[in-house]
Length: 339
Ligand SMILES: *[C@@H]1O[C@H](CO)[C@@H](O)[C@H](O)[C@H]1NC(C)=O
Ligand SMILES: *[C@@H]1O[C@H](CO)[C@@H](O)[C@H](O)[C@H]1NC(C)=O
Ligand SMILES: *[C@@H]1O[C@H](CO)[C@@H](O)[C@H](O)[C@H]1NC(C)=O
Ligand SMILES: *[C@@H]1O[C@H](CO)[C@@H](O)[C@H](O)[C@H]1NC(C)=O
Ligand SMILES: [Zn+2]
Image (cartoon, rainbow, N blue to C red; front, top):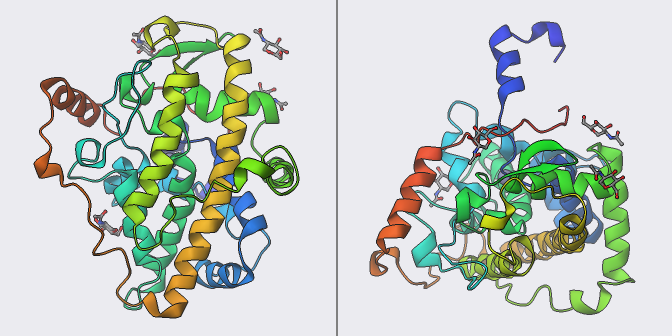
């Protein structure tokens, strides 16, 4: 769209959009490019057909769509799907519990299950399947960002910090400032370059050995369990790396330096895992559907603990209310990318 066709209202919306709730565009696009490098040719055909895009960036170009959709009229319901607030106690105890942490309105874990089922449903029109696939691509990325699986200070959004002297918050630093310091600002080319590098590390380099266990816990008939495996894996880093001395000591801290040095290997590994698991998950979903598991979706009979059976402690109820009041707006600085 030419800039002149943007209305004033649309322009001012664009410039005030809060954006730091997700890996930034660099992270999400890199995850998608890694997955493109690793998916089966059958999955690639399936995805290109649903996305109606035969280009060599078919997953990459849609990876950030859910971060704008959530602010569009009619898209607000998807806001809560970008995270799960684990009511744990870092740095002493890190854990995620589905029945405790995923509220009635949904969370990233239930959303991944929902859209993994919808993407292969016969009776959905292509637009709905397209949205489902875009959500999967994006949420597989988000679930690997440790602060998307943590309740503390609204996933770190309320922990003000600086990075190279610029005001930001802990959540946004993990989404954007830390990855960009290492890999440069977001462009498609830069994301593709980073993805090529991480794919090489997965196949032949420093991740080769451990990557053999990265698809452990993936079961296409148990999407909730599968997503919980990824959520727990990321949440572990909240205690180990994000706030090893607790969150209080991070307020107003400058994160460039030692904090950054400790964080960046985790960021790289989590982006690599997300791309690897996105490919493995899409392969499993598509293969299952084409073997006849499609039509009704899958995972419908998966058993898991029910939220009705879990009584939230008062502080957890308070934390949930805080998150609901916080809503979609983190009040943080807009991300420095230009899409
Ligand atoms: C599943 O996705 C559809 C389409 O976005 C949405 O309307 C519905 O609320 C979702 N259901 C759950 C349980 O997340
Ligand atoms: C954090 O920064 C925001 C935006 O600059 C500000 O509104 C808020 O009061 C700050 N919070 C704290 C605890 O300093
Ligand atoms: C942040 O780290 C980079 C790389 O080490 C360095 O070039 C830059 O000067 C640092 N900024 C500050 C404010 O320390
Ligand atoms: C990245 O973007 C920031 C903010 O727009 C800018 O200050 C910086 O110079 C950019 N870095 C590079 C390497 O282009
Ligand atoms: Zn997101």
